[in-house]
Image (cartoon, rainbow, N blue to C red; front, side):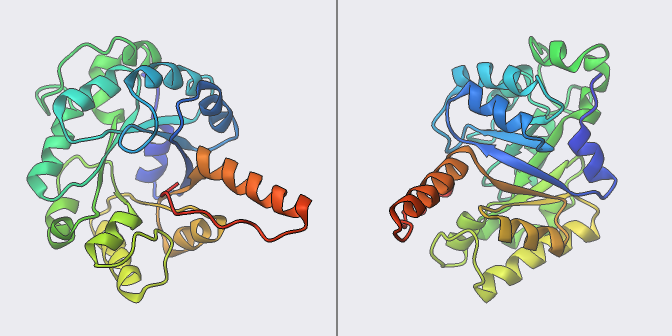
Length: 263
């Protein structure tokens, strides 16, 4: 079947850069995938889109070699199965607190006997190609998010869950878990230390580690720290950043500050 190029790079210890899709726009999905990102993630947890939008966005991403990933809204077999059947080559599962929850996410991404995924990849097999049923278990990336107090406490148990394709840090929710305001890119010492602990655990157990960033500066910092994958920004973030900067320049004024939305 089609190879998951991003997962192959992570397994080889290489680094990748991705983008986040939070708007229900097929053309935006195709444009960002065509920009050359290693992967793009369609966000069903917080993005302004639904499964109907996903059905159009995944084929748009498929016009490129960019790996399509979906962040699901919750850790359920039904939701994970649905996005994989639509053609996602990886899922990001939010708010994972325990090893049992991580194991459930992995099982939802695997066909029997390795897991409990139900067979019916109506578009997944079309996109994945010949051999999907036999090879999908090795090509689908199951990525869990560690971003809560309980998840931090159970770090070692979660990271050592068999079958993980990666661990992804949501820095704003991680900030909440540490009693801080939800600022994703932050130099707060306790936040930096916790991010470092998660990264170190992933490195020790040879699990690919990723993190959300929202600026070029922080994406470069996270790559230099050793993360395998980083999010450079989102469709909404790229648009607002460029629009606000150019508008301020045209007016000869200071760029208007906007409320942090996480994108």
